[in-house]
Length: 56
Image 1 (cartoon, rainbow, N blue to C red):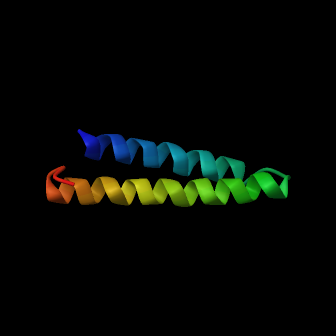
Image 2 (image 1 turned 120 degrees about the vertical axis):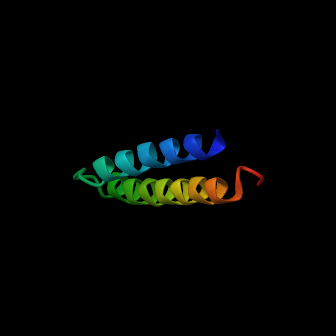
């Protein structure tokens, strides 16, 4: 179940980050870029958990 949870969190963070990057505020754009990267990392963790059978 952790695999699915990580993938969902990753998708949400990536989408939120992309939306924030459209802001005219430079600080919000930077925060959005970081959040998008975090989302990609969470998706990767979910894929790894899936490959290892949630044993990590």
